[in-house]
Every structure is written in structure tokens, then in C-alpha cells.
Length: 434
Length: 91
Image (cartoon, rainbow over all chains, first blue to last red; front, side):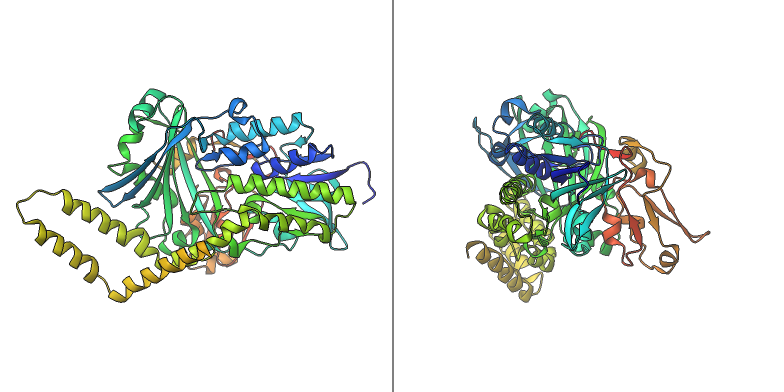
């Protein structure tokens, strides 16, 4: 511990949104902080859908809208409910100067955040893997990298969804295949003019498309399309246990999505420029690990802080990073790095939207696992079938067709199943308001 | 688009040492071998003749899915050394 050569106040492991937010918060209080990133640059190992959210990002970098490398300002949220050959689409559009979110390319955006943090005093070490935590009397006192040991009063673990270090510190257990989704994505290059035309947006405006149903067909998973300046991100996330149980290759699902008749025209003539994959924490509130111990705090994906229904992750990462940073500042001012002081981080999280939101959806994933066939296949097919009946002109009296449709919905499956779906829905909804 | 074509778009810096190792004995007895289909980069391939696993670790996207999915927990999964492995330019 008294090795003063490599001793600093705070070490942050991982240069994603959570780690950078924690580090910059600490540097702003004039406290020494080193951030260690395993990639060549911050962002180089990171992947998401995706979009970042304006308000939480402003909390960390107030001027990001004018300074950061942003792709498009999202003005439309689209929901596509697919069967193999059909699509029912709901689109919500709000043209405003104050956009709720922007699409970004992580290789550029995370790198920009790291540069900003560096200017504010964070020392950033890249291309370095932290292999172990250094412990003394059950306290975390530093980290072991491939080359040397670094000591610190506090270590903040922002090492992502796999967080081998949180496991090593005994803060979390092995994840199970139902606790994570596997995301695969392709970035497809396309002229900005074509993007504007195909998605009905102006320059710099973009949209988020969320896709339910095909090609997941009853498995728990969602597809998406995001528009960048001169490319489209198309991908899907599927619960890992579904791939295991159904013996499915994730990239084959992605190809099926790309080939869907309602999706294919969006990406026509585009050039695939990057394929990527990443895990997404999916366990929600029930899978949050121990968030602190003597000398250590866990933030972002490493703490499983993702709200999957609302596609929120980077915002929970940034705000949890900020709250961990504030806690570290308090601890350093008190010169007490024990869990007694570090537990303030958990209190702050509980007071914030993060734990409140995750509590609201506590039952969501377990109910969805139980009723996944209903919600991601049956009702989507029936919804599309309704529009098929509604729009079809064939000289058969409407009332016969509607009667047949309703009979089908009610009697095609066990009435008991229908009842269970209703109970599940009520359970999920009640939880949100309690 | 084949998986090989997809992987061709990814930037890697190769390392002579694999960051992934398996327990061949466990793999032999494993019925599911789910690593051979859930991996988004097709890293794990079972060779029936030699009864061994071929590990195309240089294609690894470092997602960690195999580590979690392996029913025997017999994959030793580490991050590749700094300066090597995948670099997502777009992510």
C-alpha cells in the first residue's frame, strides 16, 4: 500500500460512458484520477444500438450538443410489428429544436468524451488490461495490469457487462444465459440523401426504429434501425438463453431481419462497413450486484444498470458514474474509503431515477420470459391479421369477416392462456405505479 | 451475407496467443456444444474426427457470450492483451 511510486487517489477501470463520467466528476474536484482502458482508444471495444440521451449527457458534458461528434438528432420513434411477410408500423414524430436523443458512433463519441475528460485533468491510460484487483485485508487497494501494479484509495469498476473484476471482488455471481441479451449489428453505409428520402427526414434529423416479432418469432428479442449521418445501424438483441435453447446463430437472425420485405428497401444498395457484437445486461433490478465494498464501487453495465424496455443504458451508465464520482469525492474529503462511506453511492442511486425505474420493471423480464410467445409472436400475428381483414376488399360482407377474426383470436388458443396473458400484463403495469 | 463476409468488415490486431481456452475433456462430454452456434463470430468449431475444439480466437468480438452460455463453465475467457483483439470503429 505504501508503494508511493504508483499511487493515486482514484483508479477507474474502463473508458465507456460510466467510467468517463465517474473520472471527469472526480477530476473536476481537483482529485487525482487515472482511467485505464483496455482498447486502443476509449470506445474501441464498445458497441450499442444506438442513441445517447440529451439530458443525462448534458449533466456530464453541458456543451456536448455543439462540441461532440453527433450523427443525427432523433425526431421520430417508430415501432414495427413484423410477421414473416407483413408489418404494422406505429410512428411518433416530434419536430423540435430540443431533441431527446442523438445517434452517435461510439468509436467517435466515446473518444471525444475521453478527450474532454483528459483536458479536465483525468489521466487516461489506453491499451492496458487490468487483470486483477489488489486486495489487502478484504479491502481493494489497487489494480494489477499486464505490466505493473497501480495503487489507489478507491477503485471504480466500469469494466462493462462482463466485469470480471466485480466477480473477482466477490460483488457479483456468475451471470446466467437468461440475464443477458446478445446484440449483433451491422453498420451499412448509405448516402445521406438516400437516408433522408427513405426515412422521410431532413438533414441531421434521424429516427429510432424498434422492431418486434419476426425474425425472433416468440423468442425474447428486439430488432432496431438507427440512422447515422451517412450510414444505418441495423441489429437485434436476443436473450442468450433463447439462442441456446433454440440452437440459433445470432447472425442468421440478423440476415433474416435484413431480408424482410418491409426492411430490405431501407438498406438497399448500402455497403456493410462494420459488423459487431456485444452483450446487454438484461436481469434488471433482481440482478444488480453488490454496488460497493471497502475501497471499491461498481458502475454502469458492470452493475447491470440497464432499463431494457426503454432502451436505456448509456444514460444509467453516465449518471451512475457521476454518483460514484461524487461519492468518491466525499470519501476522499473524509479520508475514509471503507464501505461505511462508500455506501452513500447506493443511497444516491436509490434516490435517483436509476433504481426507481429498475424497481418499476422488476417483474418485467420474468413475466416476459413466461409469456414471451404471446407478446412477441401471437398478438403480433393477430394484429397484422386484423389489418389484413380490415383492408382486404373481396366482396364478402364485413361482419362475417370480423366475426371470424374475433372467433379466431379467442378460440385459436386455450382461453386459460388468454387469461394468463392478462394477469401478466396487469402484474407488469401495477408494478410501475406502486 | 455470410459470416465470413461480415467478419471481413471488422478490424482486428492479431495476437499469437489465444485469449480463449477450453477444457477438451469437458467439451467431449458436452451434448449441447452451444458455443458452436451462439457465438456471433463462429469462433468455436468442434472437429468430430480429432474430437477437439478449433478456436478461431482471432475472430473473437470479445462479447463474452460463450463464457456465460457454456453449461460446464469450461471456457477460460480473458480479455486479449492490450493492443490486440477487436477494434470497433463504428460501434
